[in-house]
Length: 361
Image (cartoon, rainbow, N blue to C red):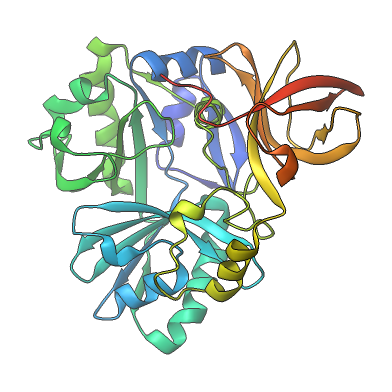
């Protein structure tokens, strides 16, 4: 079991630690609902150092990134980031990721912790003919997500960069919490604004301490992975291993907006054919109309109670105080306003198909 550089800090704060993606991680501190609302209304900090980081460099770096990712990385300028996915050869998804253009010929790929080895092998396979320089930095770098509407005000004293001037999905490389050359990225997985901070493992202790000190006046609190999940689900963001995986097409998953057929990428011809023909199933959002909490792998049924799909992610929304979820259904059931049933403890509970995000802010 791996652990982040901040494990002892989390334990000292009373975090409940659980195995996640091969790491021992903090799942909660004071409770999911309280932590969730801290991020929605104020500012919280997550240790997400389990995420993987690959550096792709050299004159053929862009060629490799373009080959393995679905989005068009040629549109990236230095200082910009892009959400993307890596299609496999079987109409599925190897992983979803964020691509950063650090320098003219240097790209940082941030991937999911559970897929680090799989992703590295997949990219390496296609790099055999391209020959870009690849470095796996995953074990050397830490990542903090400072999220919430008060994040800019709370963190501005820690950097000479103008945080309010960094647009969404842009980043700066500068000083932060007394550490030089830190990536300050206006990205996140919560839908409430904020930043993600990339630094070396030996630096993250100082960064965490300074972040907590600077944020104290704004009510900053540490946030665990459980609230990270409820926050992302309220936004309808996909979680790899739940809503997308090796068997789900990016088009089925509603990720056509990051699947650009203006270039060639792994399995692009088959995906283009699927787009032309139309998908047979779609990932949809739904809201429960009465009491009940949907969970992963619960059956989705039609109005007559006949199974038509399954829940991929579900929870009781702390912001909306109702059950919400994502799941795959045939396209004829995918239109917003359609009534379906979620089978909870052998009972058909009515739900309505809605277009995410569930939380509108």
